[in-house]
Length: 159
Length: 262
Image 1: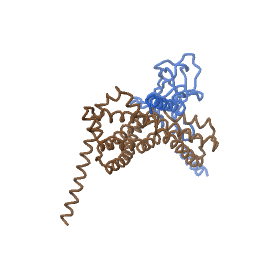
Image 2: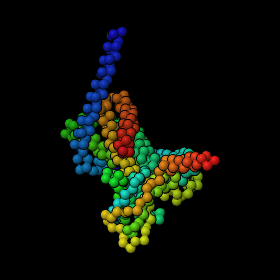
Image 3: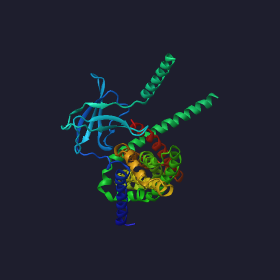
Image 4: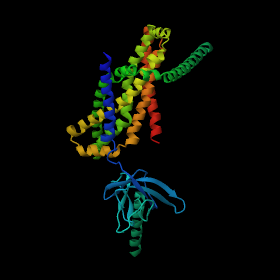
């Protein structure tokens, strides 16, 4: 086979390979859907973050508005310092509520932002003061059992 | 009794030393290939010619096996996922297993069987018919002229082949899941896109296939270059190429995966 035909076939092969890589990135991977442009950072302190991880989604009204940038333990307040990177397209009032939710019963954890009514907006470096911790299933169950047990005790005593 | 034990021990020692000796030669061969690979880029048509033989001619086997692997993954995955009522997650299962593991690994195994054996046999025969010595006589370094272009052709071809494998495999899974079984098309793609991460999954898969490309090609080249110049020697070398490449790929896959999952 002469050289030009071989060049043509190898060119087709390389083009196919690059197209497959591109296709994997676009169609299979999340390069398009979750790409966030420029962001600003906001911190929030939680007493318990449950299973929240860095790069977890930050959502408001179910729409992805940012990602968890960094999670650190504050040894002074004994709280978790969570840094959120929020897309600059979205602004939230100062008294926004940050909650840790779980997607589905066993799904991954994410941060939900519920906007408040303040006129002033959150800026880079601000801190969200209203937070709600992750729901830890074991705690819920133990609380439930504890209250059940005390109820039955009260019933016994009243009899 | 003591005599036999003595002989066995000596045999084992001889083999171990032989292996280590071969390993040293292989490393030296790898290094000189890297050092002398400038030639294969200066005379690019040599490398392109080899890419035709290792890459383009492997396309059919890679794509057909990828289609079937993807279809089987779709069927098996659906069978299990449906028990838990989460058959929508089938796209995630097919895509993740292909992009992370099956794409790079199966491509490398097929590559070792399809292209690696051809390389070994070709170079072994070149050596047996004294073509390599003839080149040396003409002051042409056979490593620069014969080995390096084949090496780079294999290393460049492998990631492309693996990416094609994953893409065609995902398409095979799609064919089974959506038109055949009737999983919702939107759920199939959207769940896949939300769980497959570009850096964690796709880039790591590409890194794996690059490493496998280096390993498979250099094993095939070395076995050919090191083969005894007889018909039997070449046939043994070809067998060793397949065995050693497969073992190296599977072992390295474990090592790479354990690094990447950290």
